[in-house]
Length: 157
Image (cartoon, rainbow, N blue to C red; front, top):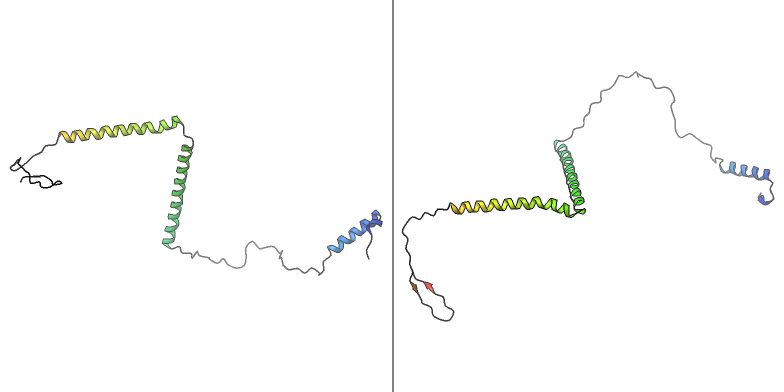
């Protein structure tokens, strides 16, 4: 039986709405419990003695070493990443004063190293003593046996 909603009074429309809602939410099958909850109080101390439950897990030494090493590598990589981030942040904000602040100490260090290197080189050349043992023969004759256009001259022996 369908009722035209245009011809209902306010009280009839309210009653029809209540009937439709009750019909929609009426369970098809009677509700059966699918669980059980025991609400009886739990005793503080039970009747069974406590059972020891020893920890029988054994971690191999290599596994512990790998774990420690991976923690160390992770911390090291994190430190390198933070250092790289700081350097790149500094390079991103380059100013003339910042460039001079970084390069002037390096230039001074390079000048000191160059001066020390030249002083060491002069000290070595000043203290060089050549000691020759044996007879010295000086030959100055030149024998020219050149023949042809692209020949070479040889010193006499």
